[in-house]
Length: 135
Length: 108
Picture 1 (tube, rainbow over the protein chains, first blue to last red):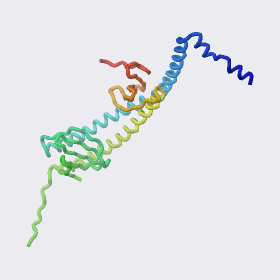
Picture 2 (tube, chains in turn cyan, red):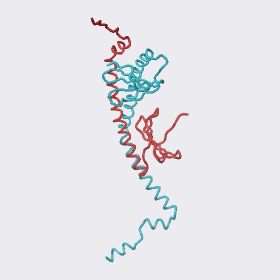
Picture 3 (cartoon, chains in turn purple, red):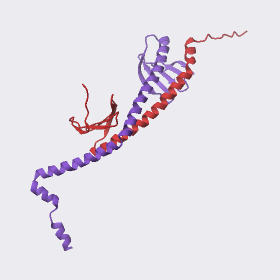
Picture 4 (tube, chains in turn yellow, brown):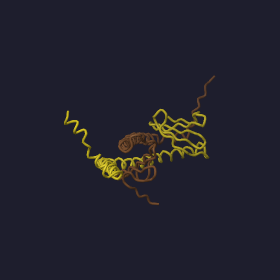
């Protein structure tokens, strides 16, 4: 117990440093901790570098392929639109259909064109009424 | 009374659509598969960015994800930008523009 008390009463090294160096020493200690933390993070980042690089590169390739395929479908839809309504054109690629069974495009005049997984096409007007459905 | 049977003339538009049906089906199927893969990879990157952010600022979180020419960008609530480059390196920029991790050179 006595020893413990004595140890407890003895000033710590850090406190000594603080007393000696004042604000400068505190700053130094803090920056030292920060540097250590940053080093740890940097090591962590370095570890997964190759994996991340592979992921990002694969993602960019996927985007290119997606754009290419979407372009093919858009060409076909434009051809179809020419015959349905000459003045209409695609303004937005909406994405996957609500039923998750195909893709959907919207046109300037509010038509919705859906191309489904089985290759069928459905065109609805701005009120949602189907004007063309080829199954 | 005799019934008159009439055969409707085939619609050229429908014919055109039917012709490429298989090709379209193939494309849509591939696109849906690619999207699933995309989502998987994007999730992996997102999780890594979130993990890194936890170490930098525990109370901050990602609010927006974007793609740039060189890689992926994650914007955080406190204005940090975590940039994952094509070569796998990570750059973290604080709200005031200083770099917390790494450094990025942008050509003007």
